[in-house]
Length: 395
Image (tube, rainbow, N blue to C red; front, top):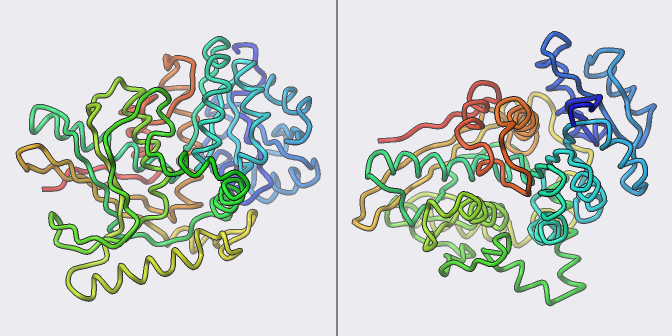
């Protein structure tokens, strides 16, 4: 790919999240940074309007490409070392692009939270990607980088403090301010529709190891009802993103040759507080999730919509990771983000993930990866230095 015209192409740059990614690159990777990047989408006029709106250089390349036109996707892919795509739901609009990248040896990053589609792409294209040299990374935003890297970070801390990694980690969402993206809601609706049309997919949706072909681990917590967490003295409620994050964490463990063990157990919940009030709050969360099903009823932001800049900047998240050794000893760590999870933080994460893969981790072998398994400490450093994340052991 050394002859590629561009380092990165942002595909979907006229969408809400894609525009944020392009805006981030324009602000932080100017001409003197040595990064040669371009914007791509279906409309030349809309791309030009976004370019002007975000203050990108007037000479930045604009590439017209359409998910429904494989030839245009191939032409786009052949011009670049790496594609960032924000065009979802990926099960509806992403398959041809993954195929094109896997065939051509072009690196691929997305924001996918759709495990059924991800498994389909792994089965269909991992062999081709390894043959061509392509590194394909799914889930490079809030789902699931902070969670995957949070587990990695607390396991490293456990190894240092206890002498070994542990087979039990739990994540608890302590605080979060901001919205999930319209793309996330649309992806959930598409997944529900796919399962409704083919009930044989139900078992795959429920399988914690759907992204670890050939490996089935131990029984995992269901995380589908309020539970009192005795270790933390707090009630917990189901966390809607657990259905993708837990799958990515298990895949990461497999890709790294099981440093957490083949008996690793992992779950994610929201802390709602102690006592009767905490229990009542947990039940309210369940009721809200059941009512909306992450936008499946049509609520929430639509694709292309999102929060204001002020709302993005006032957003945040605080995630607690608890590693529990067989003797009961615990190591705790926190991962925090300084923007709303679905947009402000996600756009920074995927942009820096791309930079990290190209500049800091060129040695990552070809294949279909999780970001944390591919880049580990290098990605943590870049996210801390540039993307507003913090990783800290708590005592």
